Length: 374
Image (cartoon, rainbow, N blue to C red; front, side):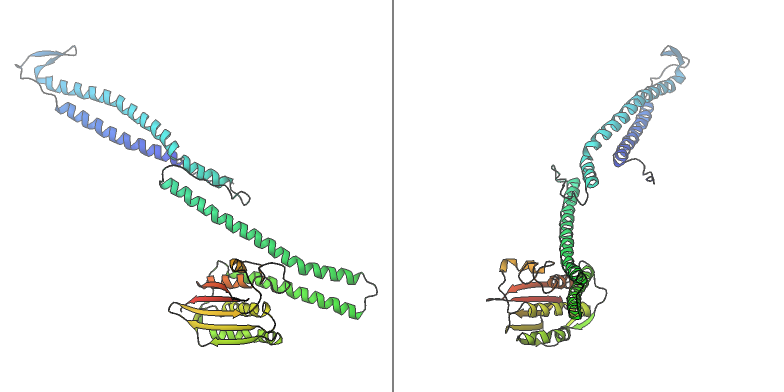
């Protein structure tokens, strides 16, 4: 499909506009010169019937003023027309030449944009020269490329990590099926063992897919549902399915959760509380502790989950909020999906809130979520 005709380019339009303005001014000056030339002619008083030769033509005294006026205007018109053509031509030539230099940075921006692709986002304009509007445009374009490059890099890393995480349960399933089916003497007990391993791997893959879908739904997107929510009730609902695992590990729990009104998506906020509590149980130590608090400050509604656990390097706490990072700040743990805190951050940002983590002295982690007052 051929592209639609867009008319002359910016360079041509600027040159035409400058030429037209100069032509208009020159034409106005030529008209004023023509008028002044006619009005400036004066003749002396001569006796009636006197004949005077003007440019080789005899002229009666009564017609002398008119002839002189016409001659003056004709000379102005001829000389002015020649000057008019020269000025307009020179203006068009200079406008075309100078606009080429002025618009060169814009061509650089256009050329860079045409050369860019997902594989060459490292190129920048890096325009040097005076800090004018064109330089501001180039700097804005470079800043946009920085953000795009960071987004593409994060997306590549996320896809690579997701592929790795999904490959593990699928490899387990394939291996178990191949080994069991290749054994002609496999009995019912062996088939049941294989089915149990396959079921566990399938559940892990399903949990990972659900977490990925939730992260894609909330990361950088707005909320589809906003309604009054009590954070204390959200924490209570999220704790019920986790309490059995905490009791099994002998964890002592303390809840300071009075009525805490907030606003947001109840299901997403329950997932935030659930992820924080699941992490507090999963990455804890046997016989450890968990402390949960909800409260209200002048600007925020807050949820704080603290727990004992392994020692975490304070300089690597922020990495815990990245995708596929776990309690040890790695991707090798066999429990969880590694998306818990990444989902927490995405949901909190969708609620226009903030989330931060602090290291507990002696081992463990405190995660604090702040949500805007409703």
